[in-house]
Image (cartoon, rainbow, N blue to C red; front, side):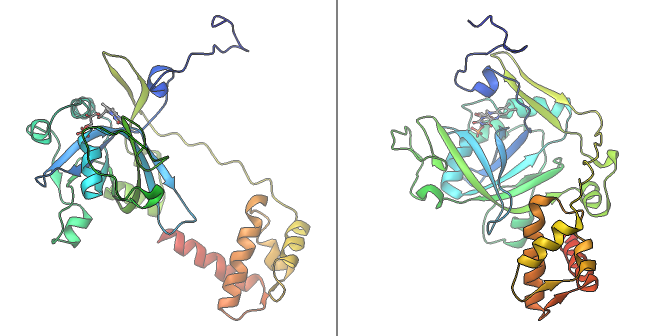
Length: 312
Ligand SMILES: Cc1cc2nc3c(=O)[nH]c(=O)nc-3n(C[C@H](O)[C@H](O)[C@H](O)COP(=O)(O)O)c2cc1C
């Protein structure tokens, strides 16, 4: 059965850690900094860390999947604070990440000869009363985060030698050996080169050199690839919606706020799925500013405001 080809694919059996054992899954390489019981910074290697809340909530968040016997898990349960350090692609850094990814060592043992330079992050600079994990100076980007322990009612989860259950579904201790943490992003810290690129426009050379963890590993090696050069791929040109479509939607969006044809013409490039959201945004701006007719002029003000907010 397994030898059968399905339109050119073979169906592989899934086993535990399927992303490492049964597939090639591109992931980031990060070192997560947390505080041990003595207040020292611990670094653990983590790739299963992804954006979780990206919009539409009161805060932005990441999700981390980790072994619940790790230093990182215990430290997050105790202190809730961590810093996700994204390291640049460099053989010596990846080697160090693999060393920091070896299970069972105490913070003191693993951090004794650590290659990375630990410095204060924004939280430590702003709040000297509290202790925060240090961040890695060599990182190209750091997310300073706080665990949202109230999600999934995980606020009473404590460090234990064994976790017998019941388990949470998605936050806190989630299985006998596993934990998930929804991490509110307090700050995103970028190196000046990347910061300037984000604000003033990126070039291929402004992208950091990132090590992509392949997912797949065996009992001998972790595998990663060094990205050579960022390549651009233009976003497909908007298929464009007709002026009539915009006018129809605009005429029905609100009873009091109306749009002129010129104003509608400025929205023909908006992808159809976002049209109502954009129109609603215009209506709420109009209501805040006591405007009942949105002309080309008001539309320009709204669009300028939006692009300013984006830049902020
Ligand atoms: C590149 C790399 C990525 C890793 N990603 C993860 C991960 O996403 N989740 C996890 O639980 N362990 C992961 N590990 C294994 C942990 O690093 C390992 O459990 C380590 O002991 C954690 O350190 P800590 O106990 O100081 O937290 C990874 C290891 C390496 C080398």
